[in-house]
Image (tube, rainbow, N blue to C red):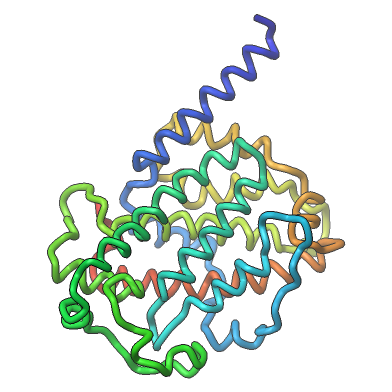
Amino acid sequence: MGVKSKAALAILVLLLFLGMLWLHGGLDHHWDSCLKGYNQENELSNSSASEVSEDLGALEECPGQTFQISLLFAHLLASPAFTSDVLLQPYLSSWDELVKFMEALGPMVGLISKEIETKTSIIRELALLDGDVPEAEVNRDVNFDHTENPEAGAKDSDPSQHSGAYHSVRSMIWVELKRDVVDFQRQTDSGCRTLLRLHRALLWLKLFLHKLSEIPAAGRLRNPSELCREAYQSTLANYHSWFVRRAAEVAFIAMPERGFFFRLVCVQNQEELSVVLNRVVRAIGVVYDRTQKALEDNGMLNLP
């Protein structure tokens, strides 16, 4: 076997190992100190629904592409509800587009997206199973802030749209705590624990997109693989084993050049890319901050 063949085989083994670890909970580590470190070193300006609403113009569709940043942006804008909640359906739809984004970066990075699909499927299956529970029981369990959020849009004005255990982040947390399905001592497939894993991965992608949007005052535009590696090292790498970190490094090396991202979101240059990604990052920030607060309020940032 030649040197190139051996190298290719080694890379494949590393990537398969990475995918397996992510699939079986490779993200499952304590995150409180990680989030504090991130906030200190990589603090982005806090976003609110009102700030994002200033950019309500829809992004353009990219013909002939599977990933559509316009759909991602639309789902993110649809996610905030009430004063501090996140609707799960558009939240999971946002992840559907983010999975397509990762898969567009090539099979090496796309392996990581399999973990995300597993997690979103768990929450969707729980929601389907919950459909078998009598509606009266669900509505009795759900008890969260129904104060209408004027920034979230007209869809919040109809109370009938806000029923069901898995309708929103806070309703899911409330019901799963009431039903005693959240275990604070061992790993389970509760919706809350699953959401926490998605939430952690969202921080990594948020930081990567933010870095990709930056326009340096002087000097060259940095390579996307370098930026993605930095975002990973600031978030997930601190809580991964040595083997997972090495495998991730290999995956990031294979990431496309910056011109690929121009084509992926249908822009011509870095200035246009910055405008589009900044809008998306702000929208992600609203969803991320609300989810973070809901998990923090219920002591769920360190679920095993």
